Image 1 (cartoon, one colour):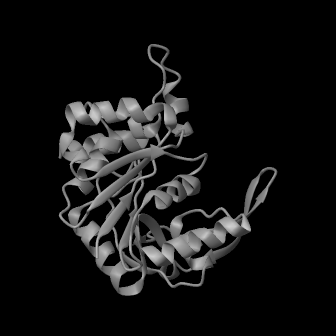
Image 2 (cartoon, one colour):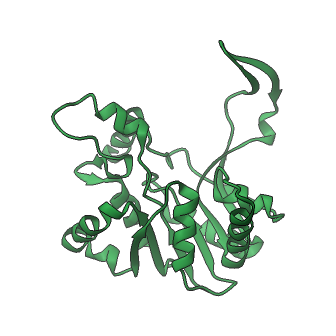
Length: 242
């Protein structure tokens, strides 16, 4: 059994880019290429998986215009990432298409494990990676998640905002993180069915759930944050200092 990691990084990151656009001195970078202590967030993320002895291959869907320059940067500054059989390929218009493009390029057996991880979650730990791989091998599908600590409200959207319709018990809620892990055959089946039906899910697990397969949850970490706004970047800088 081998483990393959897909890190979709073709997104535009509009929330981060729009905030940066207010600084006229330089064009805005997409969130995965925003620098954290002089290094793109995506590179910090790739380092975590490149250093894992359990990971055999890494596939990174990017915008076509970014592939050559990013490969050159890795060759120049991060050769250890490329030694992990890292493949840079063209992504799609949205996350699901990017992951589908990577799946089409993966050579795997039914029992191999595929992890999908957000490009902008650079604080994932080796322990989390191991736990998701183990759970995916055991159950066929697993996500990283945290119990909800805030009160969760179900609302109805209105022209003025929203109206609370119900309070959802926190013990029934987890806040999903990544990596999400799946046996190759489970994930491929879910993606094929979604493509046939024109279905776009919110994450990979939602497609697997739709396909009728149960998804296990393993404990994530409050530090395993997704960097999507300038405030997230400030928190990431704080974590790096510590």
